[in-house]
Image (tube, rainbow, N blue to C red; front, side, top):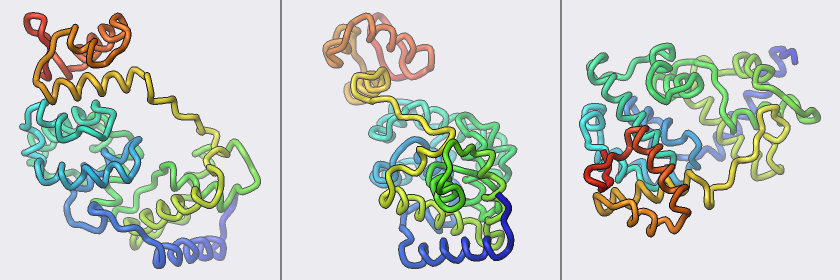
Length: 272
């Protein structure tokens, strides 16, 4: 796909016009707080915006700085994270906060090459953090941006790879205001998903999300929630709480211990 100036200008005008009239407002948008944006971007990984909205401000009120996040107990951290799922992200956040506090004086680096070395931060997240926290014209793709570019430039094709889309994203980015440009792209992508039956099915990377009910992920969440609420429990209490196969629960508990979420002391399990 080759773009000329006319195509780029028309595309940008369409996106900006939509955003002007339909842009969404969130607590983590258009703020001068790199820490808050760092937190929101990790929360938004694999989690719907509506769920993040209900937790973000609570998280910020209880853990307002990298220093606070770096030193909070695991139990208190997982308690405030409760409801966001993928609890491993909370541990990654804390480890990242500890690194930033110790190595960068508590100041978030404005460099994707540094951010990508932090636990749980991939290339796309590192780039998006820099775009939103520092208005840096980085190039990245996520589900809503992918929707926009497939719909706009590959409407009648299938099996479109991100490698095909990235040059288009780079060619059309607004270098003067990348922060709001990416807000606009994401909001337009959300709109398109409401108008058309999942445009991302045309992506070569499309995959149906695995079911949550009766998944190991659901059971992990149940165990973590139990131990954050009542501090400790025996294996039998955990099995009774989950109402799942004992061997399966034991295997999941073993995994949680190896990952550093929980520990066992005299046959009693608790959050580390």
